[in-house]
Length: 490
Ligand code: GLU
Image (cartoon, rainbow, N blue to C red):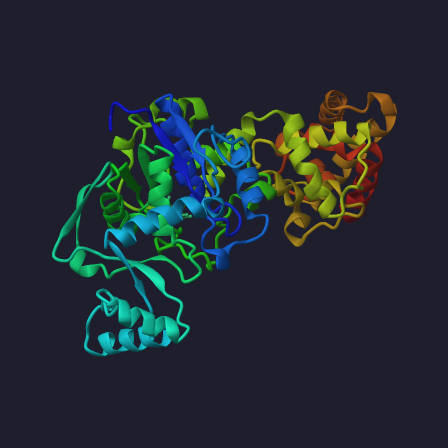
């Protein structure tokens, strides 16, 4: 298939928000398509109707767009091989189902849930791997009619050739063999005629001219089933590429029920992570660049991405690394953008009104700049900047000794009178710095002896942001009140 145009797809089932595993698959497909000047398709696989969630398609697409992943063909933009939603393709699937039934490569199975369950239990009791027994593989016309007469609605099963080996030539894993012995005749259409994933996916990949199927290892066990269907229909197989599993930070298999880590892209967006950082981080989950570089723009990723460097060793979803990567991007980010991201969090914390005035916004922008180096993601502005939103300050136990040193009273009183003398319009970081300098000259105290009491008095903290900036942003009135309060302790 190498001479063919690269056409790859992300094929989510609309069951909820975009999972990080799905986002990684989408990204790898996207990077591969863009690297090769091919097409990236988003197809919605919604035949498992019991699992469909309303609006999930919109949510998935919104998250992809937020990440900066766009597509060439899909439900919204259309394309030459639509429709791009499985449930709109039922007629197409039906004709291929008929073909397999006619060619005796598939058959109707009338076993009930209870019968299947009993069969499973008996196999387990004998210590066998449960697998459909093939009871209805060779029903006669009469037997079928008898079942129909009982009102039983059949499913369609694929006739898995016995005693065969299916070899998947995987771009990531090399040749992987599966014995058909281990694969029971699987259901390809339910009793209501709606095909299952393992059948529909083959028709869609074929008709949409998909050249490479790039997805997570959890689908590797589906590959031999799909390969068999490709062969039965006389279709050429795409090249498969199964990227590694993503493990949680404890190196355990990730379960969607595990609430100890955030597994959905939307959750990171809500906390004010930056999409380009998430993309950077996801790219490194199972793919590695040639050199030591760790930070990549999406264009650099497009340029460097190759399936050869996708690993089959499990990738660990390291949340600290993600925070680190995000911080690297936050440091470089435009402060207006960060301010926009920070505002909703400060509002939610009750620190800001719904309507932020232009003046307040300017102040916020400076506040954000003050913490930009430290901030891993925008929501962190709330705990980081707490001291700016407290009217009253309380000096915690551990800072009290600083305020009780012998020079403090003199330093703070002098600094206070310097600040008092500043006209409101002259109250700025530059003049705050000068006020400290003058205090130093007048009192003879410098360095820690000078700055620590001022810092503690103004902020209640021994460590924190640039002091003149912090004092300026606190405002003259607040700082004077705090100096008074600290002087009472001193
Ligand atoms: N609908 C499948 C899923 O959401 C797609 C798997 C595939 O890429 O073939 O997992």
